[in-house]
Length: 184
Image (cartoon, rainbow, N blue to C red; front, side, top):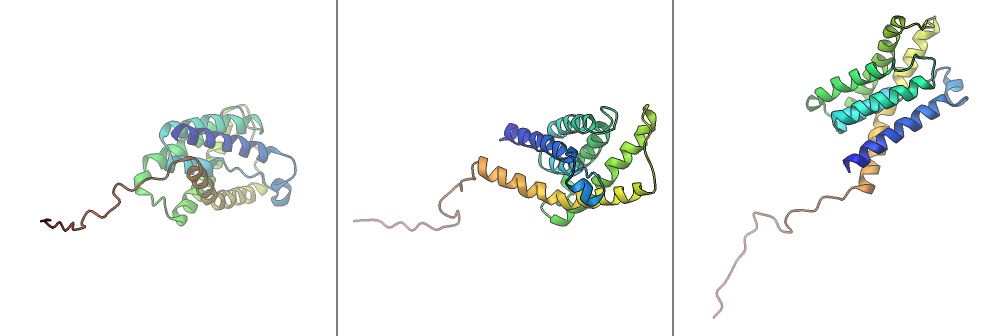
């Protein structure tokens, strides 16, 4: 199930980047091109191993950069950094609680674009920062935070469909008393 889970996460990243780049849709409705990769990185960091987080950061970042105005590879480091920090501290996070998922999604969805914007002047690209940048950043943060529990729900359903449900170890309780009588 681990390899299938990794493949499903990478497929979701590919489809997410593709749908985000389509003309029309949420971009014209909100006035912002939303980025759901940070929320997917939060899911991967809490529910999978570091290899899956690294694969998601590399492939998701390259796919996102190839369909946006970012220089190729610029999004990889912020995505991996967010995933690494969350994965490193995953035993401290209440991953079963919806509010913790939303808060981590808000945090990642706000810090990844900010880190990308900070790294951009180091390349030959000129970032377009204007008065609307704050609005775009706020909307991206809120949408990413709100979508983070959706990843947990979606991949939970995938896991229930493709994984075996655990069998109970014993049919009877361990503290059951067995009364034996001697037959004559």
